[in-house]
Length: 326
Image (cartoon, rainbow, N blue to C red):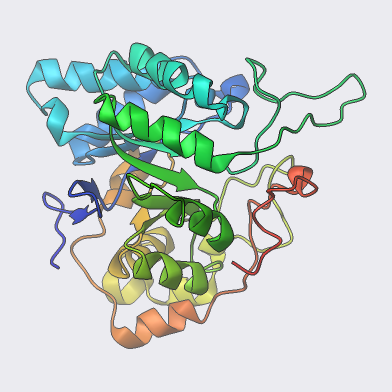
């Protein structure tokens, strides 16, 4: 399938489609200036991005909505050209909380529907409005996950027209099978958003997902912001990799562009996060070259099987997804 800057949607198993590159909008509210997200989304749409990845807990969905609506008013895009992915956070997995939580996202965006709504992680935290619930001693307050019940509530949201496609994030094979093998399953998850890049290529999970028509959406496709509070810093920065940089001259592309091209060339959707206009442009310029089969194999060979985002603070949760091999 020939991907181009104007035509780069790939099919989802439910008949919808997803643009293979999107803009990630995660930002640390403490260090992000107001309006930075709006400006980035507008830049991205002008550059050619049609897929925006967001979440209620990022605290900036109102900015994303504002940017998209402005571009619609300008006549640059129509609502149906844009693919927005929202996320259901771990404190909202109780079935009766699912629809009201999605409706909050819709209110902030001022949209009638989102294109994709995903369970952000399989580990339930204490239900309520506190995003990161802990007790008075700072211990995490866990909750028993019932992912099948959560999924049924999501299916009802799709039936109500509030969302076009349903997916998951940070699920391992066992957790995906829990949904796939659910009696009376109405809609399969179309996607699984996980960390994926040349140092963590996810070969087994990718193969499993491909067998089940589940698209992998890669977060941190360029490695990640090196924030010690949630990132494993034992792995060296991906973009300094010698091999990725050795291809720069041949293609006149940066290590980042080569890392992104690697994933889209194997059917993996990428959502690089940037609020820097130059990098937003650069990350999108990946449709005018392709890597050889040998280069693809060599990049696969860079896999160190080490996560940057290991979520170790929750590693004693019964549904912690990363104890399993994949």
